[in-house]
Amino acid sequence: MYKKLAVILSICIITGTAAQVYAFELPMQLQPVNPVDSLDLMPKNTLSTPPKRATLSKNDIQNQYAIALDRFIQSNVKSSYADFKLLIETTIPNDYAYMRMAENMADLGFFNLAELSIAKMQDKEITDVVTEDVKKYYFPSKKLQPDDEIYLGEMYSNIIYNAQSREATSELVKNASLMLNSDYANYVAALGYLKSGNIENANLYIDKAIDMNNSNVNYKKLKAEILSQGKKPKDAIKLVSSIKQQPLYSAEFTRKLNALEQFILYKTQKNEIQKNYHLGFYYYYESEYTKSVRTLLGALSNKKKTNADVYSLLSRVYFDMKDYDKAQDAAAKALKIDSGKIFALSVLGDLAYRKQDYKQALEYYSKAAKDKSSPDYTIKLAQTYEKLGKKEKALDIFIKVLKAYNNSYAAYYHVALSDKSKELAYLKKCVALNHEFKDGWIDLARVEIERQNYDIAKNYLGAAKHIDENDFRYYYYQGLISKAQGLQENAIYNFKKSLILNPDYTPAKEELNI
Image (tube, rainbow, N blue to C red; front, side, top):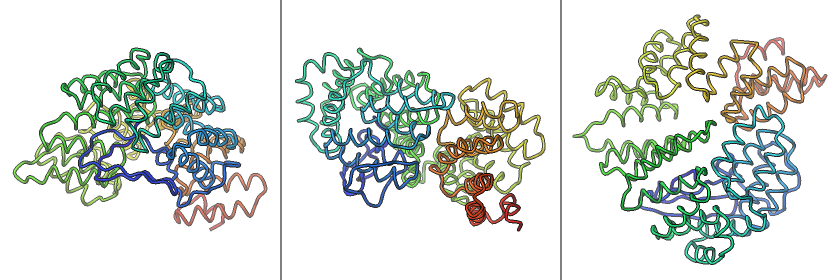
């Protein structure tokens, strides 16, 4: 039930008019996920009316979702539950939306609503990976009744959002029947004790939860956090290593575990430079780039001590922030200290690739690809071979990556584009492993447009637009659908919109006879 750390001096969790502030001098605990953040739905205003009808448009979902979450934060959990249920039931069917809702409902402890979202998913080739990961990560061993979920939701809300951890936990543990029969209730109790600083009882109750459900990743994640604050913090590192062996395949859950690892390493390190390095790494995994930079620069404040790891990671963060000059400078400093720093080599490869200097990029990627801890660098190497016209060599590398890493969504994507016989199946596998990978959804739409399956194509484009509403390809393919359906004005509008976003996009120009 965690995603973000309280790693700045104050964190505001804001949904419309609701705001709760938690302040820490340093990051002390993992904070619960803000589901609106995780859906990229941060509305400017929250409506006071209940949900009516939802589509995949951001305005509908963000307003209605924010209403329900606001009620949850205010501990009006019964109404929140009803609102979320109505949102799931009335959303125009879209597997992407259901996958997102399933994860977020499970994260709040609304497992029956997560099941409702899962039941509405239509294409199992796309949704099965996320479904299995959500269940392994969050689900209790025994099905809870909705009334019990609502009650535990109230306890959770009061513990996390309403500064009532002691009161809520004390009430919860007196519920003998629930504590005896529900592993999730014991998890919430452990969370409450941790929030109130009672490490001993937090340990006691999380151990009970794990004894009742040893396969639940989220319980072990909390256990690792508790251990990191106890007398034997290094035991937390051992537990994280064990957790990372769990068979979770989707990109989002892999990210969660990587972020946890960096947080635990931060908590257990004594060296200040290393602490800041791991904290900066955690921020990076959470896409909190500004905070990551600030933390990493803090690690470099001691001019007498240079650190190639810090510069190397800093180069990656700067690149992802599109601050290319600083990325170049940090990477060069990292390699001057240690020529083998992978992030730095990869970043220099990315910078060369961006400038279309593919021979230079190939040189950097070849060095980075010697690191076998991740397929990312090898995939970049293969992409560069494609740009240099060596498509067969590139395809061979992608296929080898899939043999070594069966959860590499990027490898599935590139093989799909290279092999028509595998195109549809591999594109589905790609978005199944990473449902936030926009290009996969767009190419699925392209395939279905070619097959004249326009309704299916629209469904895929809806997911792509929700991820990035300013992708020029979305409007181009919408234009093709409108054209095929005889909606000429709509088609022209979409082709023009595509060109506004990318004035050099030739296919849109051709449709407009420009």
